[in-house]
Each structure stands twice: as structure tokens, then as C-alpha cells.
Length: 493
Image 1: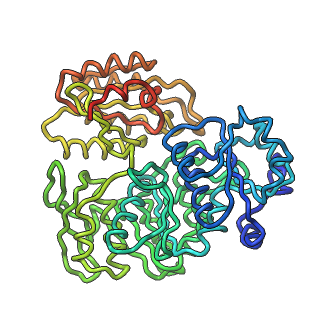
Image 2 (image 1 turned 90 degrees about the vertical axis):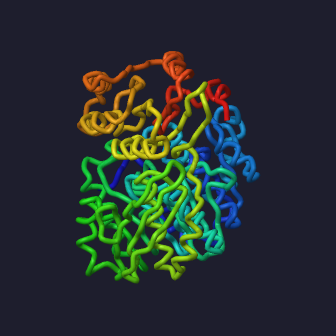
Image 3 (image 1 turned 45 degrees about the horizontal axis):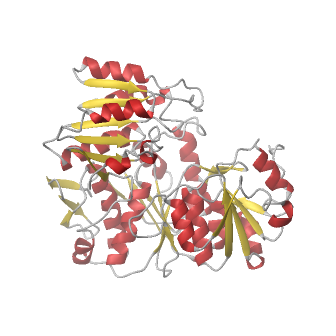
């Protein structure tokens, strides 16, 4: 049934965009400072489009990134007198961020301007990716990290690949057009815009698909994992070259079983800790991991990387399989994976707070929480791992994973949880009972506390200044504003 609350008179879907591509020269990004929007804006500029944008707030690092590219940005609040209907009519297309709600004033304003509008995945798919050899990296966990690893490995193999990564990189932009050999894109299953309630990756024209994992998440838009699988079913038949998936996840196995014979891509292969291909970890060190894989030559090969933790070894294994399939030798791949970096906020050491190491990570799903704690155990085997968790996303702050969070966090030596300040928007779920998780931690004989405000959090963190511990801060938000406070200035490098 058509959604009559959205005026689609000037809406361009991806097919319309493809047909109108030659008529589009000047593009405006509405809410440009989001991670995906900012990266997409920079890609369009590299592709030759004239790009400007606006947002209500501009926070680093994306604000600094946009400024460095020379994209002209406006404040929706301070520049309201400039951003008139007549101003917008100079643009051929308005790209709308998915933070804009359907019932909000911004949506009504955009629909009434008389200027064509679209989502940023549609703009990417039609204006940039349709001419690329696209490698879509999808899954519940590991998308950002795996995409960044792919970019690094293929650069070391001598290519100059394009990419779009939903995270902040150290010394590199979040998006880059590249030489056309490959374009690695983090392929998100979250919806695209208030007028396009389906996954972003459905508009990316994916040639190769890497599925790192598949579990239930995004409970604010999906009722079950079956609904997420439905989104993948919409694209898998059109993936033209290869599909690689992690067979450790039953839902991924179930999804792929249907397509082994019928998919357009007749090359579907697997990896995983429980897969015959591996990876199989041989040795863990604090600064490296040695592991082996059985590649398509049916021989077992050994690899050593600077990455630690099972999660990261799975991520780099996917890229090894893909690189070998692309024709690179085992020797060259072994050299390319030896020294690799992670995206900011993925096991990022932010510094020392007194004597304790502070690590920042984006983990917000119980599986990711468990794997990140495990990685810290491998990297710091002789230190206590003290966890701070902010349940920030709609799914994380819901009761859906109540028991799973209790289990994952049981691995922490002590636990600080931030109070949930807004109800979950997950469908048919209550709020996460963080007090119950803390009580379960107490029953294990471990310290645990709930904090409500930033000052309370910092008082708790002060207790670790005289200890030689690890403080692992897990949040896909700001953690009560911790990362925007003077706490950052007190960290010693």
C-alpha cells in the first residue's frame, strides 16, 4: 500500500536517478554531517558533482573532514535566512539523510520545495557505484572493520581501490573513489530514508558480497531476523560475481542454502571458526595472532597479523579468501596482512588515565561485546578488564537481549553501566533492565554500578587511576558525553 503521508511528487528512486544522471550537476546534502552522508557527499564531489550541504550541528571528526574537502556547509539554525526555498531551487537534487523523521518539519519542507530529492544510498548507487566493481561488505558485526581491512590489504597488494567506510580513519578520508579496480563499501541493513523503508545495500549494485555475520538487530525497524533475511533475499539473486559468507551463523547458512543453485553468482563459498576452511588460531600474542586457512588450492597456509581477537581474525580471513579468489598469491597476501590498523572507536587505545589503559570501542550488540572483551583478554592477558557499557541503540537499550547481555558482560572484572535516559523504540520490547545486569554481576562476586550523569561516571573512572588495568568503554554513542568532555584532555598518550 502506498504511504500517503509522503508527498512523492518530486521523489527520485534509483532508476529515475540513473535515467537523469546526465542532468544532475549540483547536489545538496540535507543533514550532511552524519557518517554516511558526509562520506557520500565527498564521493559525489570526487565524481565531479558540485556539492553543498547543511546540518543542525557539526561535530568532529566529520565536520573537520567536510571542511578539508572544501564542501560548503550551512547551519540549519544559524543560516535559516539563507536556506530559503529560492536558495534550494539552484540545485538539481537534494539528498536526504535518514535521520530526518517522516512527520517532521524538515520532511514537509523538502517535499514542498519543488526540487527532486532522494536518499543517500540511491544517490550513491545511481551516480557513483553503477560504474564500479562493487564489493558489498555486510552483516550484523564487523562491516566497518572488514571494509577498512579490505582497503588496506588491496592497497598493499598494489591497487588503489575505492571505498566508503562508516567510521573515522587515521590519516585517510572515510570515502575515496579509487582506480576502478574494486570499490569496497560497508553495506548496511538499516533503512535508507523516511520515504525508503528498506536496506541501504539494496541500491548499491553489488558485484561481490561478503556476509560477515547474521543475527537479529535493529529492533526498531525489524520484528525478527527473518525480516532482515528478506532484505538480503532482495539482492542476492542479482550479485553477479561471488558471495562469501561466514558459516558460523545459522541464519547465514539458511539464507545461502536457497541460492547455491539459483543465484546469478555461481561462486558461493564459506569461512568461519567452525568451517573446514578456517580460520584456525594457532597462537595468540598481545600484539599479533598466528592462524591458518585452507584456501581454494586445498592446501593449508599459515598467516600472521598484528590483529588480535577472534572477531578480527574472522574479519581479515574474509579478505584473505577474497584476495586469493581475485588472483593474488599466498605470499603477497601474507605480506599484505602483517601490519594493519583498525578504524577509530574499534578497540582504539585512547590513552592512559593515570595508570590504566583506556580503550574505546563501538560494540553495542551482546555478541560484539563478548568478542571485544575476549580480544582485550588476548591483548592484555595480565590485566583486569573493567567495562563501561552505554546501551545506546534501540536494540541495545531494549529487553530483547537481556540474558545475552548478562552473559557477555559476565566476562568483565568490573562493570559500569550508564542509565538509560530514553525509552527503547524497539517493537514489542521493554527497556533493558540494567539493574538486573548489575545484580547478576554482584552475584558473581564482582563490582558493578549504574551511573546516571557524566560526573558520576568520571568519579567511577577515577578509581582506576592508581591501578594498572584496562578500562574498556563500549558505546555507539557519546557515553554520557564522555568523549566530548575534558576527560579526553586528561588522557596521557
